Length: 450
Image 1 (cartoon, rainbow, N blue to C red):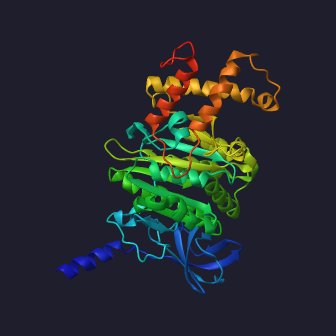
Image 2 (spheres, rainbow, N blue to C red):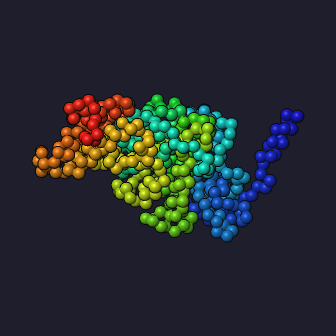
């Protein structure tokens, strides 16, 4: 009886018809498959016979009898006339607790040399829809990140989606590792999309360290096909959604949204889509909210996905199309400044250009008063910084600037930290309170000075 049940279950899982076609042409990265009229759909998966084994692919466009496909691996070895089998179902993965401490590719396959990956009990769609907006819980309480500039000036709350905006080489990866090590959460899911190949292992061993034990890493390096790079971002969110639905507090770190957008642009252009804003195709701006909206609070009673997405701004232009689109979707943005990094202050967060949309509720009234006071001092100093550095400003000319000259360096010192040293928010606000108290000659921060 047991054997009959197994056979019956196997028969139920078999597609009623198995369709296949033949490769008619290979044009660069694009593979054209004929013979699938009426069966192939956009997003459908194919397995194409190659000289070195089967190559997985996805249908990205349809033109009459021809299905336009892109592969998840190098298409070398695919010949005209090769068989292309159409998969019966959408791509799914089966995450579980055994995935913690492991590194996967965009298709959920282990790439860390630690052996096979134990599958979880439930299959999840890699490309899923976010929870219904009207049924989602609200953003929760403030999370301590251990990063002084964040906890003081752009606090992160449970279920919030924050963007890190910066040019290349100013400390994004280091800042992400600080989030992973110190933020209060149950599971960390990290997506490395289009990362340099040599930096993946460095990030895991040097930056992430002990946090790997409660982390899942999904990596697709810069040399991976565009389809795999895009898939890595989707898989990252699918893994995060699995742990969220287990009632856990998930921290999702994705580096970077810009490389996801670039991968989608390559896919769109290869499929014949016309370029639009600065060469980005229209589907790029349609896919961005579909990806980013998957993070955030789950349904009432479920867990949350607190997300930090990095945005690599082109030429340090923070108004370029991808940065502008992402900033309008997320719940806050943190700007990492090359100018600040060049003068040696790390993390190089520009607090005057950074914003958390959970303020002022994320702070207590006293904390918010202190934050606004510190921000005003930094703004007053920044406005006169060039004159001060040139020696053109004369002390006593403006009491507001004189006060900023005394306080701004101390505030800057307060938000400077080593990547191995976590900050404590209570101590930070106490130190800030002490700075103003010392300046005013009292132990309290009076309204007329704030």
